[in-house]
Amino acid sequence: AIGSDPDRARLRACALARPPLGEMATGLLQSLFAGASREGCFFDAKSTMADVAVLCHEVRGLESSNGEQVFVSVRDLKRPLSEETCALGTACQVKGASLDTTLLLRVWAGKSQNQPNKQGPRSSAPSRVLGELTIPLAWLVTHARGVLYQSWVTLDVGRGSVLDESSESAAFGANSSFDRRLEDGDSLEGPRICISLCRATELGPNGRLVLTTDASADSKADRWAALLTSQRQHAAMSVALHEQATQGAHGGAQAEERLRSLVSSRAQEIEELRRQLQSGAAAAEVAERINDADQSEEVSRANQSRQAEVESLKAELDRLSIEANSKIDAANERIRSLRRDRDEATGEAQRLRQESSHVDRETDNLREDYRQLADQKETLLEIVEDLHRTCLGAGLEAAGRNSIDSFTDKFRFD
Image 1 (cartoon, rainbow, N blue to C red):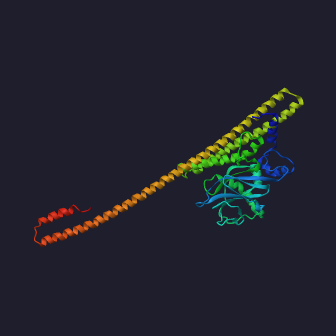
Image 2 (tube, rainbow, N blue to C red; image 1 turned 90 degrees about the horizontal axis):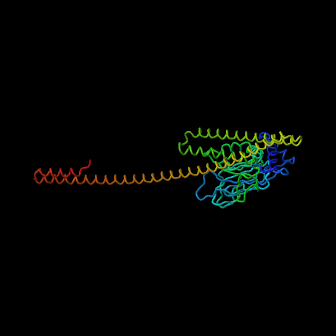
Image 3 (cartoon, rainbow, N blue to C red; image 1 turned 180 degrees about the horizontal axis):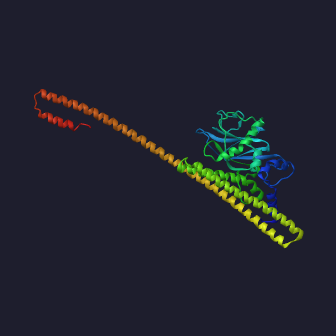
């Protein structure tokens, strides 16, 4: 709830001052250089520079050998010597990044974590690049309000060369393709990385970006798009992984489409609540001006009603934020559970293959024993036949033949 009159004033100013997304790109530089500022902006009004923190949570779809460490590096393409290296789960900071720069993020694999340069990490056993990604800060500010929160982005692999830092066309290409990479990040196939990006000052004491419910109204509004993107991606990945584990690939596309439709519907509802919030704040301010002019009791009651509506919409936004965070946690837990089930099934299949191999070896041994017995039987039969012919040559009676036949029948194999 909104606690005091200054809080209400800041909420109204935030709602009325926030332009539509289509006008943000045009008015951003004007607001930067005209002296306007408000809490939560990525770059200060007095400067076009900022310290940027990039936190890499996890990578998937990349192959590394046993004993190799996987780590990441981040560099400002305008400043080749600005490269920073960090392990997964820790933040890389780029000092003094400008609005029009592009960050180059690379994923490395090597026996040890070394500071990479343009020719690769300095080590006797060089590390190798598994994938890379360009992050245009201008796109990030105009489309995501300067914040990414646990979002999946696809990586480039097998390029074999570094982007040309002096090429403006390369930076433009990165700017035009980053939104597509972010859109494709919820796929379960291909190389991708989960990252958070913000101002370095927004990191918590543990070096993580934490979204809390007691943040200011401006901060919540700025981070809402990042939170919604993360929730949409993890929900889509959870549904796709569940469909893959229970039914295979069949029907996955339909489930993903249903989820996308659900997320789109929820986004429309949130946007409608945001419009209502803006409308309510504007009406409340107009009512306050009229109330100051004529002290009308009727206008005052209308103003109170509008303020109550604003507080209700604010509470609804807080509830949706908490719900989105809980869904992200549930989706992560479900993914871990499905991974454990997959590992158990893989282990069971390996055990059955070993048992099958053992049975095959025993069958081969029994066949070999059978062959040897058959050879021994033939040898014994030849001995008996020789004995019978010897008896006939000695003039023994044929009654002995019946005994020999009875004896040989007991040793005959079918």
